[in-house]
Image 1 (cartoon, rainbow, N blue to C red):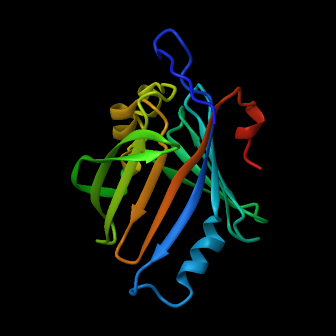
Image 2 (cartoon, rainbow, N blue to C red):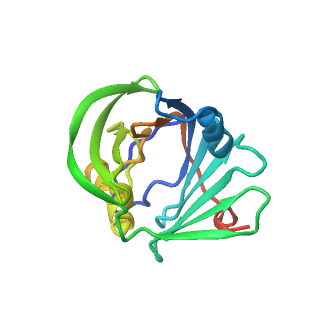
Amino acid sequence: MILASCNFYGQKSFEGIVKFSTEITTTELAPEGFKNHLYNKYGDSLLMYYSSNGNFRRVHLNSSESGADSQYYFANKAKLYFTNKNSSQVDSLDVKENSLKLLSKGKIENQKILDLDCECYEFKATSIYNQNLTLNYCYNIESPKINPKLYSDHNDFFLNEYYEIAKRPYLKFSIETEVFKIIYLATELAEKDIEGEIFEIN
């Protein structure tokens, strides 16, 4: 684990990698085999690459041969692109539009992540399918800083609001519905230069 604090003004926004474990649970409302289906789709861990220009890429590790591969965000387009393994199809989402309707938001109990005291925020919302969701984001105040303006157009999932609050990469993200809960929990954070080819959609 590498952690470094920096003043964001006059310096680059955080560039580096955050590695997460992926934990999936389901409720009694889930159909049989749904938990395995989600693990096959999303894998058991995740790499998130941050560029100092606001681009990021999430890479799902150990998903199935037809599972999710990557999500690419390009700040100058405010779009998220999705790819799956063994498929040339690329889907996109305009994240200027929030697919969720906010019900409430606020600070919740702190949590220890990477042996660090992290502040956590919760967003309760409904989806376009009238499904209730709860999103949690956690961060550590000593983590490298991020320029929130780079994500001001990423309204979906309230990510712009999170970065405006934290100004740091999240060390935990979770999404919970009546059927399932997915938790991405950081296991490593490293500042390093990220090559441009990481953001080439294959």
